[in-house]
Length: 399
Image (cartoon, rainbow, N blue to C red; front, side, top):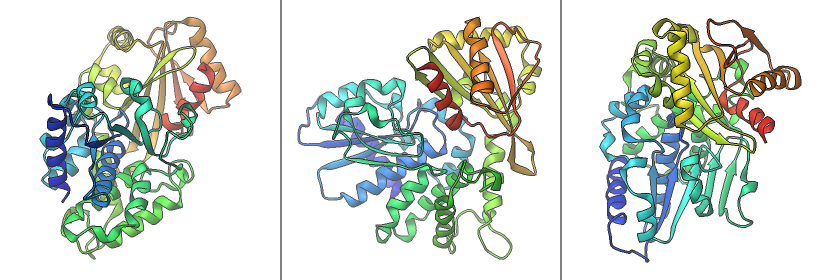
């Protein structure tokens, strides 16, 4: 069962990180990306578990690694709700700060890295690039960085959620999954719904494709008779996709819970950092309106906190991507705002010109009581520019 697998994975990490050299062991560490969202966490856990089932009896261990520090998991409110509801415990998960990665590699030379929900190692793992052997992802393909023949498995498809691709792998071996494993399918279904914004029609072929919808339909059939989550059922007994989405999105976008986090935690809650040829950029997704932040903090404090975070992360540019539902009744109808913080005045002038004039992005600049020499603020009038679609454009500009 998955619970036993997680406990065993934690024990193995402790064992392999001890002083004893284990040349006979083979380990595949399964990393999600450093944003630590539902997709990264559950695709890592479930892909590792699935491959452990199909490789049972071999001297090979797939171990899921949550690519954040343990204390940061409690800010992932929707994850904690799902995990706690099915009586899992955070202490059984392996986080970045749960073990010494270099010591483990020294003790187990045959250690490889599997990337799910990204296809280039995050900045904190870039020294591991030669150990990447498998990739399951739905972002832009940047795998030309790897040596020829290095990747033993590569699945990159622009679906809405990496868990859709993991579920596709599972379907080939569905007989391995017993009734008591059905909570795995709740995790996958929930993640797909959050990633696709409950199959918002205007997001089709942007945030989801038919493969995601077919996966959700199949998952509903698998879970039809399961007793977990009665709150996610209609009166007729059918699974209520909207109830699942509204509950999880309500937690994700809860303004009070998010505003209780300090500024640094807001920046790091859903954060990715990229190094380009010309600059290093950080992207923080914040789940409430900028106006709410401005009510809590003065313009001077916001600027100061941006400067401090930018310095600590050694960034040239910080993008703050504010996203929130327009109303609580429809969590899939979102407003988006992009704040660019950069102390290089020429770059701060050239970048918006590139985005609006060259790339023809539907961004309207708005005035804020904030230093325009360091900050530019834009409304995404079509509400379509997620970090996943926005970052490749910045990469092109800064490379």
